[in-house]
Amino acid sequence: MQQIPRGYEHRPRLVAFTPMSALSPINRESELRSDATKLAELWKSAQIIHMVDSRLSAADDSLTFIDAAAVKALQESFIEGDRFFLGIGRDDNQAYFAWRTTWINQPEDDGTEEFEKRKYEGFKTLREVGGNLDADELALAMHAVGLANWHANHTHCARCGAKTISDLGGSVRVCVEDATQHHPRTDPAVIVLVRDKDDRILLGHQPIWPDKRFSTFAGFVETGESFEECVSREVFEEAGVYASDINYLTSQPWPFPASIMIAFEAITHRPEEARPDGTEITEVRWFSRDEMKAAVIAEDILLPPTISVARRMIEAWYTRVDGYTREQLRGGESWRP
Image 1 (cartoon, one colour):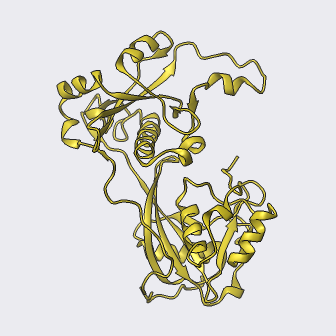
Image 2: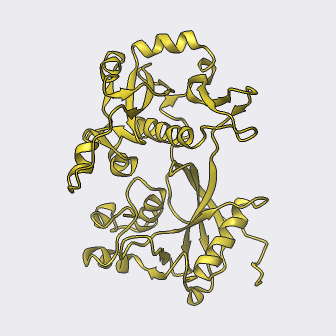
């Protein structure tokens, strides 16, 4: 196995990047989770996100909140589900919850192309709506979807196999047999903007993505591995180049289903050695700013969606030079199918 060089040099950040705010607009108020009486009182005046199959009650560009009275009315169509306490707004002192439900009588698939749209009318996935949400609603949506995914996949105790139930405002699940508490897990993954000495960036294409979709490189942190070691390993494995000058940029929750993306930039001094691994990455391309601008105009590239930290990293690099703006990159973005 070819060895990856050690001894990274941590130099000043080269990409002009504005990290996400360190203070969430929603105070999670973890001390309230154990106070069932207080949570019940907050529920009465709460703004509530209704969730079905991890979809959020939402319009095209905002979440749609309901109140406790609406929840009661909807119980004719939906099975009463878990209530997740999401926190209290720092600016408005408003309590927020998510209400995860399932259908009592699920609509029957009639085989038409419009069935999915009718079934989930008024609901959207985080992928669909996330890029249009403001900071407050995005924080709520990320929290709600992350909890919903975790609860859906951890219905039984990992120690004894017995059923688990939601507790402490949805922040834990408790085994009904031995009272073991099970907490949501978050899987760390690094995501890397690779540059060369000429300030070009290297992007890759995954075969599961739409044609022409290119993005930065990413991968899960393995057991016993530092973030920086993971950056170097993933870049070498996927793109065939050694990464040095590794610098931390920011992080982003990514509940698809349960990750957090830790974003870095890195430099490679041998750009000519870039090549795809042929499995996870099937094509790699170097882009100067002019080449990226031309590719977007010609619709020769689909960039990551605006909700993603990958897109923010690319835009931060692109706009670091005068005359290059985010608007020039609009229109060429896509989710995976």
